[in-house]
Length: 395
Ligand code: ADP
Ligand code: MG
Image (cartoon, rainbow, N blue to C red; front, side):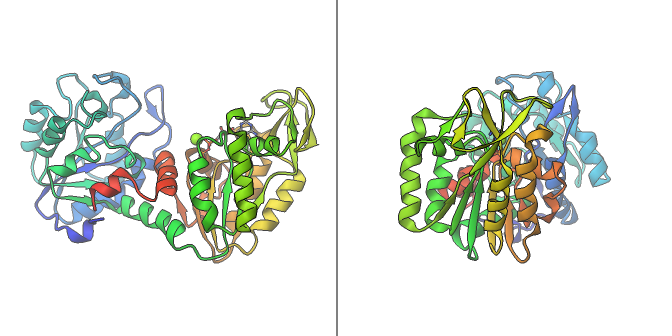
């Protein structure tokens, strides 16, 4: 990838694709991690005397202006972090980011200004990767910087399309994310363990497939464990199972045995009849869950086994919580495993996956990881395929 090291930004207007797809509630930004993640690149460009013009998407507007998906609330937050004015141009169906009206306003600004344009998904051509729209974006700058790691798996106009019309570089966040995940994929210090969990096997099959030949061990918790347990003949009650993935689970288990990879599944679970705080719970064997009950967290014996297995690991990738961690009654497994990874000495530890990152923040252990990815879907796809459309476009 071409990076900012290859680029002298001084005096240039630089179009920067960031990922400000932040969680919103009633018009307010609930978590600004993605804004702070963009600061190193923006500060670097400003120190070089460039004028950044920022593009991002937010939510899923349906190809037209929609006030609820406007990026307007981000401008004051960014202004606070940068300590300088951020000019927002948008908030109106006439001021779409590719329009002539926006271009004129951007051109009229003095050098060194920071501009945030409105949601790229207001443009019907954005997700279609329309070359006309990409060219319109390209008029806004002398060069393009892709720093939206969380969107780098999308071949959209503001991510990959525009790179055809401007000299293009990876921003610092993009570079850091790709280097951490590639280190795990291509050059892990052994022993290398992967901890997987979360809701669905089908989301993560590609990752299991790609990583199984590279790891010494894999820990599988969360709801996805039940597809594997049922595939081995276990009784899982009304736990979440993907019945159309049972054969695949069996094949993966065989592959692990064949390759000498330790694949650990929970031996016990915390079960309940419904997902609700304060509902009665029982510890049950993971392959003998009573009818009407479901496994909602790994049990105490599994916590101990998983934590012990991870001792001595030198590289750990964590994707997916061990249970329904959003409810305290079912958060112990995620807490124990997350804490154990965070406490490893001298290990390279990475969290990918939106909910796992949220869990790590909730548990207060996120800052003890070597790398916390800002891109759930993008990190999964990179781990599965080894590259992303955004990486290819900059190479
Ligand atoms: P990530 O975003 O980290 O990749 P996923 O999106 O795959 O993780 O899965 C997270 C979701 O999985 C959480 O909302 C969590 O409540 C749910 N989950 C984990 N374990 C279970 C379980 N045993 N039963 C039902 N849902 C579960
Ligand atoms: Mg998720």
